[in-house]
Amino acid sequence: MRLRDLLDERRVIVPLETESVREATVRLAQALVATGVVADEERFAEMLKSDWPEDIVSVAGRAFLPHFRTDTVRNVALALGVTPEPIARVSDPGRTARVVALIVAPLRDASEYLRTMGSLARALGSDEVLAALHAARSPADVVGVVTFGDTPVPADVTVRDVMSPHAVSVRADTTLAEAAALMVRRRIGTLPVTGEAGEVVGLLTDGHLLRHLLPQTVQQLSTGQVRSVRRRPAKGAPTDPRGMPVSDVMEKSVLCLDEDQTIADIAALMLARDVDRFPVTRDGALVGFLTRGDIVRKLLGT
Image 1 (tube, rainbow, N blue to C red):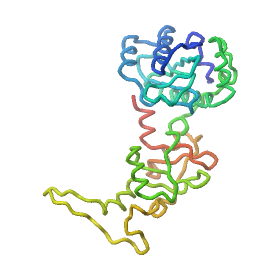
Image 2: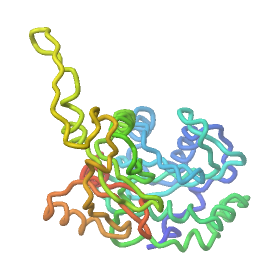
Image 3: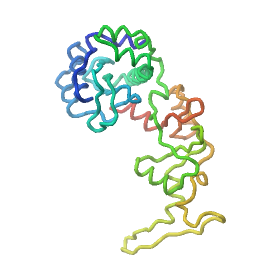
Image 4: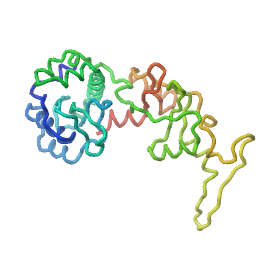
């Protein structure tokens, strides 16, 4: 299957006159309704009001990809619009784009939904495709962009389709205190450690922080007393472990994934190796992060 199999001029709006991503999504949703994709229009309308997706995919400032999995629709479908001027999300006014693509899918079609999302994101990452969409003056122009329509939708879900892109990372000389602050601020439990070329040289987890920083924290006891729990530092180590570089405590043997590996293979690897989180690399450099939760949430979640 290719993206052209999901394109329908009746679900392409050019120009899409709107001022926000949310408004654009509603307009595209109306096009889906008008072309018979939606089986339960009332529930679909309620979903748009109450279940607004927090994880709208943004393709490097090129496009916004709002997406819903819902049994109010009959099949995987795509609606696309191109605005005359860049628009933004209300919550993130600094990130703008002119292309908005709405993807909907029944709950049962998680695999096809993710494969379509990945193909669309790859197509919109092309400068040639983006320029052609920006130059389009009608739905027929969009459908006629050959390099866009010819983008294949793969038969398998890959790591690229499910991973969290733009993984947060630190360098080897980052202190434990700085890494801990970053993990708390970003609400993450694992940080890849990268070298000068972006290669993964280690992995820092919340377990490392507990092991090395907790003994230096002040504990409030049930009696109301306060005590400081300390341990004797290793020979040559800083007196205050908060100043230790992450390279002193990180895992140095890290299993990385290639973004083109299939999720079926990775799920088997997770079970066999009892590992639930992996950095993802391309040509040796970090490009994303994949956890067991990502797979469960995106393949099985609603």
